[in-house]
Length: 322
Image (tube, rainbow, N blue to C red; front, side, top):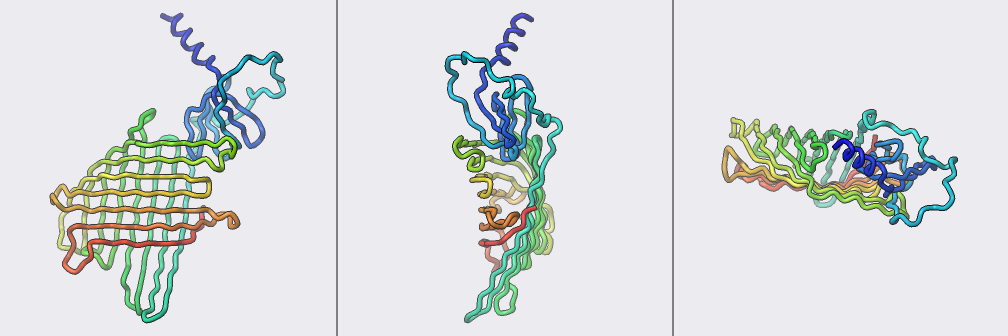
């Protein structure tokens, strides 16, 4: 039995490399591609073992063709890649990606309109978890009379199970709206996630700059909803069913779309639906500055008389990345 295990292990480590990775410093590694996302590349090297390399340190990544006849001449020792030092997996630290955005709009004619939108979004991610914070403040007025005045701030944590498409999440959000049936609202919940689509397309000719990553995940869980300033004075429980789509078009462009329905559990037949989309592009000539366009939509089935159950806003804003 021991002989068999040793033979299997030897065959595993003796597998021919199927990927070639070139660092920005010029060194080349050949081995097995284990995992890749927009931040790190996990690479299995036949001598150095499993390595985690920052995506910013990689120039190209390509799949090798089927192995042909062995080379007659031995490789030049001066070009061997066995001495490359990279960060071990256990020492890889998470990274923050934040954006502060400002959007202004004004028009004058038969009526005078103006709007202000401020937003702060931040993402922390490492190999085992991801935290997402999003917030915005929106104020609109027409002829000096306020027509929109709202604030929202939410945080969500995602923890994927190691080696699985499943994971779990927890989330919480605070909302203020001067023109809703309620003035303040607090929601929280949690549940499980499942990764439906995970595409990682690599163009060897273009390097990593034009590689796009597409993910689609489903969420299901249970949450609670507490309103203040409305006729509802108790905590209400609701379900959570949603889809999250993300497409990193390139290093400078990203598109995210999500939609979540919250069916009532305490009040069967009532529900909320929230959908958001944002396309962002980092500007070439202004380092650290990005342009973002998108929408935020919410529908609430149970509202006071005279209150529109639909709430839709479109926005375009300039942001500072940090």
